[in-house]
Image: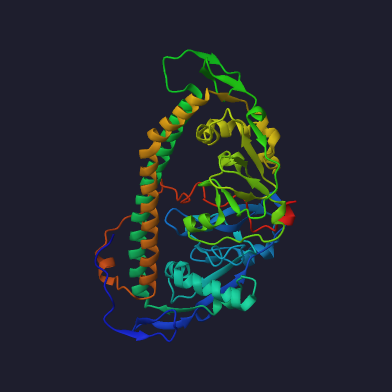
Amino acid sequence: MIAGPEAYPAMKDSGVPWLGEVPEHWELSRLKGHLVRNDSGVWGDDADPCGTVVLRSTEQTVDGGWRISNPARIRLARAQIAAALLTPGDLVVTKSSGSEAHIGKTSLVTNDVAALNCCFSNFLQRLRADELIIPAFLWRFLNSPLGREQLVFQSTTTTGLGNLNGTILGNCRFALPPLLEQTAIVRFLDYADRRTRRYIRAKQKLIKLLGEQKQAIIHRAVTRGLDPSVGLKPSGAEWLGDVPEHWEIWRSKRLFIPRKELARPHDIQLSATQAYGVIPQDEYERRVGRRITKIFRHLEKRRHVEIGDFVISMRSFQGGLERAWAAGCIRSSYIVLQPSVRVDANFFTYVFKSRAYIGALQATANFIRDGQDLNFDNFCAVDLALPPIEEQQIIAQAISNAVASTVATAERARDEITLLLEYRTRLIADVVTGKLDVREVAARLPDEPDSPDEPDEPIDAEPETPDDLDEIPEEAAL
């Protein structure tokens, strides 16, 4: 992406196995030797519209970095405000989380954040470096794989809980370049990030447009069929509108019945996912490249699932019903729907994932506001259009053919984003640990201010996480 950086001419052994060799003129340090503030935030009282802005967490941005998020107004005492007020250049670090993926994620307090006159919550730790460290350099290091791995390892081995504290952060080891070199490193990485963001945003816009195109194809096919000359009739269902006059409108519960059978002795564990449907947990792990916690107790209380069934999951109000692509068992809190002989599973796979159908589900109750799960009554409240079975099969095949190139193009775009983020991560790690010398390259770079009209959107609007949440003990869902 950016040509030119090469290795430093003279290196030395850092004495730290995970850091390896560093440039000969870099200083080996512990973070505590360069911090003028290393303190926890405030708890505060209940939300108050007239209170002080408090930052509660951080989130991942379009380029894979981290930014401050979730500000809230709470009432603080004057002394608390004075102690926890953030200034430009401060770093805030996530101290505790249910996942190692979030431990140690670090955000840089920018001028616009500081202008809020905000404080930070007790779930974050504030670091303020001395005059020998440029905050943006330290921010880059702490978010690099070596920085994060060091913090995660120390948080687990020291506390046993996967939590960070000021002592752990202060003991963090790193190699410190001279100030002018830090400036060059920050300039180079900022330039690389701007290009990364622009590329990813362009790919995200393409993926969004392709998704809209796919949804339009699906909606028209599952509500109007394939023959534009066929006569139409009112369906009586708002989400369907007019449908072909030879189609029938059925109550959902007459086409799908709840499967009551409990797990069989040799059933494999399944995960209900918005990205892949209902698939074996082992297959899900292979697809996403990480492990999930499996349940080994009360498996007999789970529900049996057959191929072609549909599952109402904990997130169906967001992404529709999930089709089962494998037989096995799933959480007892889920509803398994067995299709009748009048139903083609391929056709209703598209119906249940269409935005119009999902919108109809969302309109059946206040479960989104009240925190309730989608249930069978919600499902039954949405009537379905039923073409003849042969026509269902033809429509499903036509949709599959029509969206094949759209799906493939979107998948390639996602793969390109993934590869670019992997490259970015490796580049940052090599630069902030002295494996690449960017001083000459940085000096030749043009000045390119950030575009204020391009917000840092999260990378994944629909994260691919398993919906059956097997990390929760099974007995808690009974």
